Image (cartoon, rainbow, N blue to C red):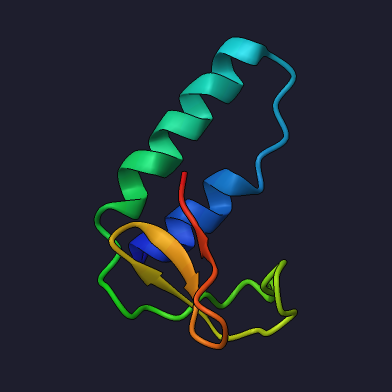
Amino acid sequence: MPIVDVLNLINGLSLDSDAINTWKNGVERSLKKYIPDGTKDETGRTCPKCGGDDLIYQEGCLVCRNCGYSKCG
């Protein structure tokens, strides 16, 4: 399974415990580092700044290729 699919699977988990949510966020941040630069986000998310759907991963961050907005985490 591609890393980006694993990341999306973990991101979609709804967990009740704060301790597990902290673990979940840490795993997400760690996995993002291994997504190759230029990988397109296929989740259907849109840029909160311009509304565009051309989001890619750069250095573990989601970046909008339309306006340059970056979401790191």
